[in-house]
Image (cartoon, rainbow, N blue to C red; front, side, top):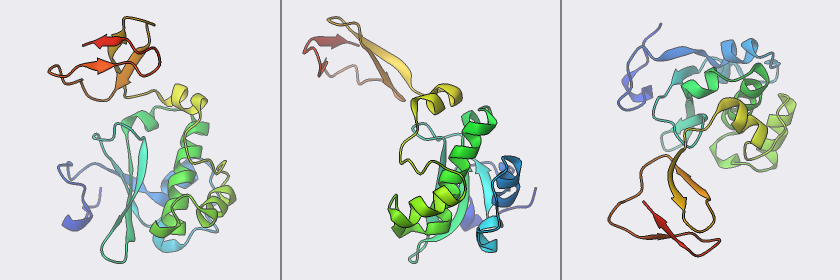
Length: 170
């Protein structure tokens, strides 16, 4: 794998965690790359083991917020082709539309042109396919609701369930 310049590497990541380029990932899930600029297609795709709340992210850097890479979690790589296509198209649309576009009309148009639904959040089916990094950290004594989080709860604090109002034992 080619080495990334120091300023393009995610902090604390192994230098050999590069998975390929945006172009190779788009082609692997049958996304039409004809409308994607060549400088975006040449960006590296990196595996980032620290991603918990998201399965992928477009990374921008510098004052001008230039796109520098696409980061993916291992969970995405285990998902179905349809799930990977949706997530990759979503993130490549961010790289193409630019940092300031966020999830606005310009981003939505770019996402839909790549075959993405153009939705801001993942669907329940997508989350079920890819899996969640969230773990059950507590169960409400009142209603049995499972509280899921990426991190443990602080044992020195008391928590109240917002729906039923009962205290949650940690």
